[in-house]
Amino acid sequence: MNWIAKKSLLTESASLIGGLDRRAFLKTAGALGLAAPLGAFSVGNLAAQTAAAPVGELKKIKFATNASAICLAPVFVAIEQGIFKKYGLDVELVNFGASTEALLEAIATGKADGGVGMALRWLKALEQGFDVKITAGTHGGCSRLVALKSAGITDLKQLKGKTIGISDLASPGKNFFSILLHKEGLDPIADVEWRQYPGELLQLAAEKGEIDAIADGDPKAYFWLQDPKYTQIASNLDHGFENRVCCIVGLRGSLIRDDLPTASALTRALLEAQDLTVAKPELAAKAFLPNAPKDKTVEQLVGVLLDQTHGHNPTGADLRQEIALYAQELRDVQVFKQSTDPQQFADRVYADVLTA
Image 1: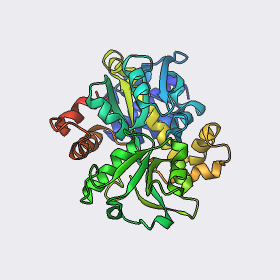
Image 2: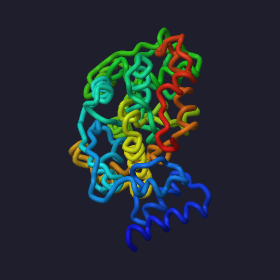
Image 3: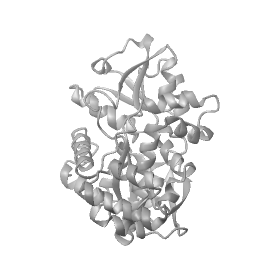
């Protein structure tokens, strides 16, 4: 089937259906070998989408990432499986490690066009005015609160008067578990002590009795729990957060304002990579393997991915609501300013690049 015939069939199918959600559209386009890469994500504009990116013309994009974070494996899938190219993009990955501040500054100043990061590390910076807009959620899970079984802590309320080890004072783990402690009736500032250690020393600190629990992320925290000495007290997939996003897509504001079709294509490509990760997690594990700890196998990495919710990637009103909830909760634990209106904040930092 040639390109014109494919485009005609896709447009005809859309008009017959009368409306397609994101997953249905991606599935249809994928079956036809199309990406509809550079147009608005509405059924009425499908023909314009498919014609917007001539074959062979790729838009160069710099995408910021943390190569050590397995929850970002779908980004590597999008590279290896040609998903970015399918959407008309030539993407160069730029590794900023765990430095969210450097990553966000790079996006805001145009050194990178976008990136994926943890919501509870990004939102405070966005409250302060970085010119970065959230366009999609990518998954839930990857923050864990763990302890040695010998500490005898199995419940959040048992942490009153205890010390929790963290990698840094602005870590998403600290922010998230502060929220959980608050919901359990504890004051996360007065009732617990947060003590900072380099990430590789957190286990040692626990074993020496310097801390009673550790708040950290995958893949480290997941693999700590493979040791029977450790137990999980809580994660960001329980206590009512089972369907809350953890990591988000952020694009530079000027890209969205000046080149909405590219912002749309980049977001769609990332969402399709999430879908593929759900369907074939072994592909994501293999793509991430070069960045994984040296002693880990593809099968072990698949285990980590399956313990996260890569099928939860909200957009639109759903994502705005999740951002507003986080803003309210961060305000409750004195991370956000008391003057910040959660819904106004969500409306300001979210950008709809899929239906405009």
